[in-house]
Length: 134
Image 1 (cartoon, rainbow, N blue to C red):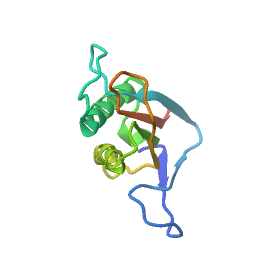
Image 2: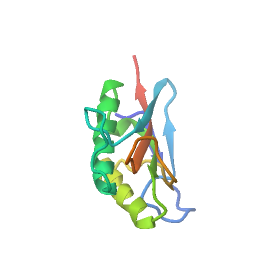
Image 3: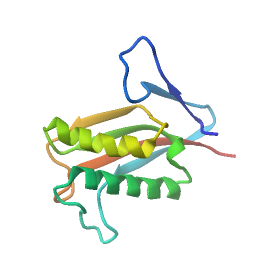
Image 4: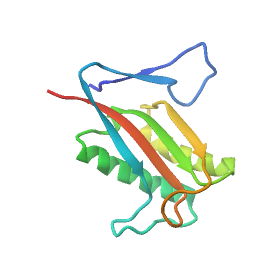
């Protein structure tokens, strides 16, 4: 059972995610570096393809969560960064991350930014997770 509890409110507009999450006392917080669309050799994958880069970000995010002793159900929040001013690009990245998350629809921020750190990078996904220890 996850230490993360999703919080919803009928007092706010309907959204495709929970408005908040609560993390139980006695848990360990895990802060992932932004998951980037990098291949094992460090090259940027799916150049020019927002959805393709988002899929690689999710795959890399899952590897990092596993290395930290967590999984997708332990995620408490995400931030999805897309190097674009086009709403359709933001939605393309959102759709990939949201689909991967399934019913565990954590609070998430979706942002268009001017540039990301790696050459040809269009997407990055930041994650905070929480796991019970002991």
